[in-house]
Image (cartoon, rainbow, N blue to C red):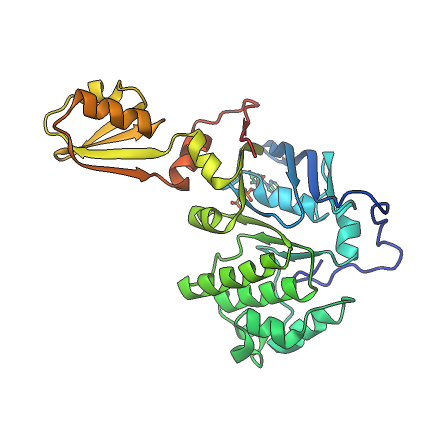
Amino acid sequence: MSSTTTPDRRPGRTGAAPPPGSPAPGIVLAGLAKAFRTPQGPVHAVRGVEIAIEPGETVALLGPNGAGKSTTIEMLLGLTVPDSGTASVFGRTPNAAVDAGLIGAMLQTGALIREVKVRELVAMMAALYPAPLDVDEVLELTGLAEIAGHWTHKLSGGQTQRVRFAIALVSNPDLLILDEPTVAMDVEGRHAFWTTMRAFAARGKTIVFATHYLEEADEFADRVVLMAKGRVVADGPTTEIKAIVGLRTIKATLPGADLAALGRLPGVTGSDRRGDAVVLSCGDSDVAIRALLAAYPDARDIEISGAGLEQAFLQLTGDHHDDQTTTEVAR
Ligand SMILES: Nc1ncnc2c1ncn2[C@@H]1O[C@H](COP(=O)(O)OP(=O)(O)OP(=O)(O)O)[C@@H](O)[C@H]1O
């Protein structure tokens, strides 16, 4: 793994590649579980996570604080040993995949090596791998060219994140794992970051990233895996995730209309008033708009809009209790 720490590249630990002729395996997390002991009792961080990722996919792991995203990522990287279940990366164990230079990671934790310049650090990391990318190309790609001569311990939070990104990229990994990569970046930094990620994904690379930024998941991932309380609660393309919770709203000017009656219209799941306007949350907005116009021909200024991933996220995770429910989305 190329991360902010020196990877373990001891000889003899490269692990066996999958047998020739077998289909290209991606990433498979099967029944992964992990609990931590604390003085207050065990914390069940991950409880039976099942995720399969095809090579070349860009997948967002999305969930509230404590959902188990980082613990899942740590098991995927071989940094945390699962209590049960397995993780496999391109047909190898995580440790074997890391040792073979197949994984680049950008984690939330881990300080940069101090007392070196940015370029020196990226070059040092590149030297550890058999087929690294060109160091100057990586510095350019990650927006570090202008500060290549700066000391690593004198960087801002956003600059430090970019150096972490450069280190993750420089080994030219097949799988890039990013745990909340844009946390300390400003708007411009985020934009540049995702532009680079798109270019990287276009080379057929597999990308898994954890994020709190719902719009990032919506915009950059092929697929979203929603986690809550250590479990996967929904898994599918962002459009499908939105569809399963019926996330469209109809807004219409309708003075004096009875909100309860509006809420009972076919296709409507909720109703609210904003001044003279009513806002209807819809399970099926096509059915709802027909019913609305039939019942209230005076409705005007009608707007129908998608509610976005944020609302899907709240709906899917907000009422998720400790049951086994997982929303499977056709993919
Ligand atoms: N080393 C540890 N010891 C004890 N509890 C832990 C440890 N690591 C994680 N946890 C707990 O496990 C749960 C899942 O944590 P995790 O960091 O995986 O979630 P997360 O989804 O990544 O959250 P965040 O978005 O805040 O980073 C949390 O309740 C957390 O407090």
